[in-house]
Length: 401
Image 1 (cartoon, rainbow, N blue to C red):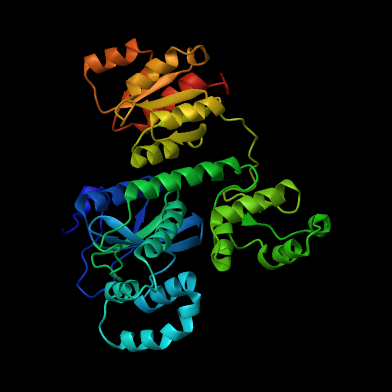
Image 2: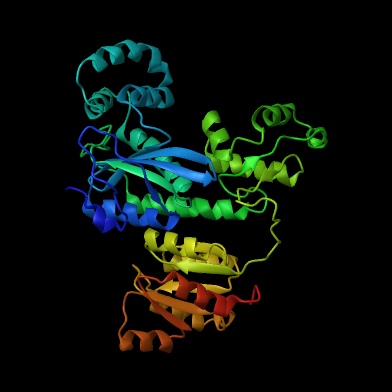
């Protein structure tokens, strides 16, 4: 299917002559998920190249490859089939690396596709489709995590640069699984935000006083080598071939010990951020798109916890006090009405503000939500300003539970 740029709500700019390089088109952070959703709905195939502006004058190049509306690969750059196969073999079957090199060079002389070469290696049990998909899923998650909160520029080319499809049937990665993983990781990032302010944070060069506190030689050497006041946590993790979240959590422990500190990636570093204890809001919705939108709209107003079904929400509520519950009405299993009714029967949650979110806008639906104890009723698609106003209404003044 041909991609219709008008459906994304973002202008594609001037039409270019075939063979010319397409121009980069600016986008705001809130536009990117709408663009991605249009790719999914229209089942496009092609290559999305991005320049993600993490701070004024500094950009990350990123790429997502699409096949029939599904992501097949994400990374820092376009990857050719030779590099792709070398990387996979090195990771999962390093003992085959040398023996496969000569064969691979010979194959690349001929017009074999990436898909054909991977199928050949799977058939000969050098790799498995599960290994290939696991590797691709990890990189796609890292890429989505690094692009969804920033503005930047993009270019879409409606032909995939690499025919990198997964499984015997040839498909892309599961979008819901990707976004639920991204959302879960964002919760972990938020827990260390007071020490490591996000994936674009820059560890500062260590002072002699900091180094004198460190008892482990390996950490001293790491600090001297990587903490130069220029490289972000993601850039360090990429150079080390490590998960940025794992690196961030390690650095958070070091920061807590007084061994390091990070620059906060903001436009005006001269304005100190006042410490504020934000209210905690739990959003329960089975749509990753809706959850991402809610998190983006409310991130400056409160701490967001996410659950994709009623049982996950109940487990969270049992462990974590919250100040407000955003509750989708239509969910698989126990729906929002049933969950609201259940919570109102428990004395602990009798006064918890509950805001219902739903696409249903009939008077009967509103009356039903009110009957089971909902405080407010908002209809989808959500209006960010209205959502923020409702949340502020019930959480102004900090924690209330």
